[in-house]
Image 1 (tube, rainbow, N blue to C red):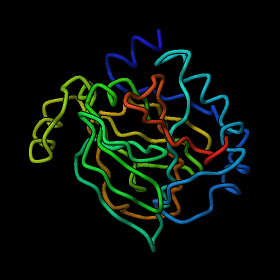
Image 2: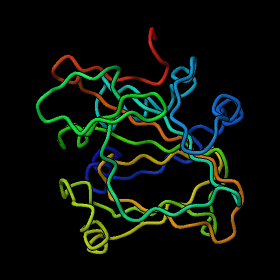
Image 3: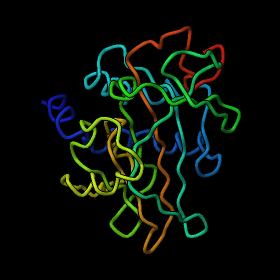
Length: 219
């Protein structure tokens, strides 16, 4: 069963899931590399992904953050092994266990308690092919079950796990447990590699906090 595999490994490939909509996604998300997105109509466009994620983390799954990654010969970077640690909320409300706080591109970010991250899924929708030479994501299978991993220990803990290189064709969708350890090298022979990354959650936040969502206020 996909959910059992996802819970054990922390990663699943859904080949071709969004191949019908990549042109529309490209048109909607051309905003620059690493750009946090809030775009009207995006939630409807990725409805097939939302349905898939609901089968993995629960029927209340909803998209709560979107980021466009755009690697090319001009924008070619590397990231060492790490866990994603922050979420985006509508406004700051000081709540026990949440912090530190920061603002990025006008959006309010905060590091939540680990159990919030553990209930989330991160989806990467590939808008271009990604082969072994074009900086595919590397993941450490099962590392989402390790709990909070200190940054200084991330590389060591990743080496203790089986690793997978996440190759993809246009329209493929990779689903990951949000706390999974992952990394990315600089592209060896870079061509454009656009990925729309969407975080999903199926739970409400405490203390009056609310997810920012991917369509902005009023949606």
